[in-house]
Length: 405
Image (tube, rainbow, N blue to C red; front, side):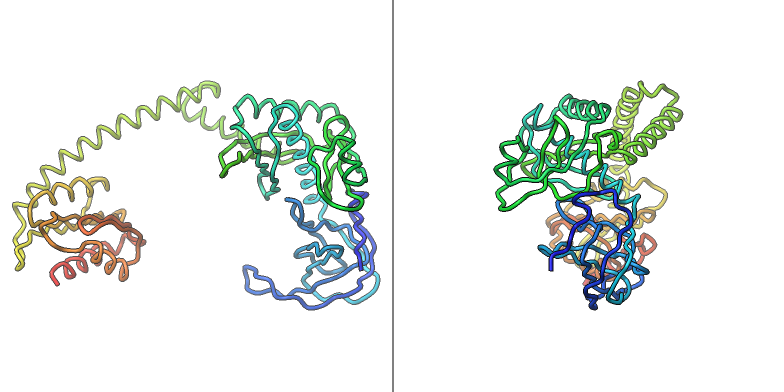
């Protein structure tokens, strides 16, 4: 039986009556507390929107049962609920806050996509309505900053004009003659959303009645995704909340850096330049320290039975970045091996002169099997990070034994 979709003609329905035609046990669904029992419910009609076209499903209740998911199975809509329902009359209730948010985001997406295509020749190839952010993927050349701003400004101008948003029906050819933004190759009568004098697009989703109810479009950023360009945006209530958080962040950064918000880019650039200069100076100092400590370590090392000079040390009260240049300095000497672990961070650096003849990669693998961490390298040089820095001494002792084996 075909489910009548009440939201197709009225996205503002919050409660509705329906008949439960079937309720059968479903596969348990995962939850934080473990598998949760679920039932599949078929209604004769529904106002619950199923996940489709980039828009997530509605939530709410059918009688006393909570909606867990809503699925579109061709002509049938199945409601996944948390308890069994009897056959017969029942009341459905939509989670309106979630529904209206989705309506704002989806209608805003239609409008934004229309502006990108109409003004800049960038068609939308996919849409995703996320929990926090929405995205559209554009095909074509990289959208410049002025293109992103221009599409946002044009969309918001139409929002301020509060143009009607209507539902239209027609065949694919009829919609094509009416100037549909993206033609579809489907038979029968299609549903389309029309934003007056701005956009016409086939769509089964839920939408606001007029552009003013979108509230605002706020484009966040653009990044390369395979052959396309992903634009992040938010609309309506989400845009207001995001803008508020952005302003609060700018205010706190301005206060911290003691500068007006408009001077933040220059202040951050200055800080980054100073950081780079300090880091360059730190590397120079660490290299000099590594040369001195490396020479002292080699002189103090006692050759092993195999003739190797082994420098094994847990580094304490020193900068973590000393381990790399120190190990490198030690390994410049023939038949020497450096086994260094920074105690506070759990960073591991093993290095050897090629004449030493050991396989440090194999040794590291065995060490990490007993004292978990992540890392790798080659036969002569490896780096890793222990999951628990408190096991640094244990890891070093294990490495020394493996080296002597």
